[in-house]
Image (cartoon, rainbow, N blue to C red):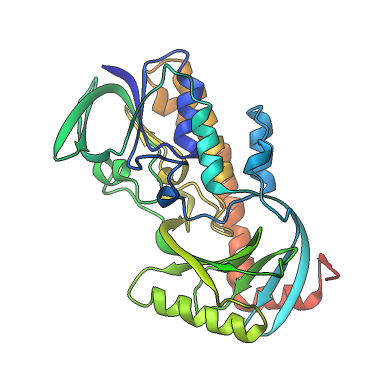
Length: 352
């Protein structure tokens, strides 16, 4: 029997596994065969480390290896309101990185005592009062493992949350689509694009070496691809050159609309990162919450397995407060008259 099984080897799951491995027998499971190595397993992510994520990495005592970084490093954001034609620049500080290499680096930090099962999908969970049986798909059959505490670190489409907390309120689900384009002219900024006719969330363009990445968080449904193609047409007319497509990727992303949709777990099950619903409702930034929730969960678990979910829920209070703060910011950003009035005022803007 394992003390802890962690479903999901992304930043949240890999970080938690590393932080509790010295005290417990840990199994880390991921549906990807080679997370962070195989290009096919790349996370659909803009690959920008925002200041909040940089801060928690400092708390964790982590410094990024040079080979993870990609150019350019970004110090300003271009905000574009396609509906009104407003176009403003704001100073921001992001670390631009290769997300695939970032995930691989985090997994490489795992001590050898952490057992891993990659290329395994969750088939079922049997939760008892003192232990949990986890059934995984393996080739054409199944394998079963037992643990005292189960961690859901399996992202927006969390199977752990779906199977064990099916009646709990969930954040609204979007489809994040990204398309990569080759370019000669690399923009020295990150573009945040707003157009309610495309999405009630936002879209982005991020420079990556000799590429630029167009992404959008779109309401799920049959029109998502159509809306994305319409966005490309609008941006080409706006002056962006989005023609030489290299690759296309997509993934679900959550957007909480109230703190009651955040669920950190119950009993002997803990949810961390986006599986818990921890992601910014204003920017879809999730790495800071992935690391923060992993850190808080590790503190709760390292005090003892019994009662760890209750302790984690208490420790996670600042994360709930952060989500509430971002919800207020989201109202200002996504209510069209307010956003346009702020942009028109020129408040906090900088010269291009």
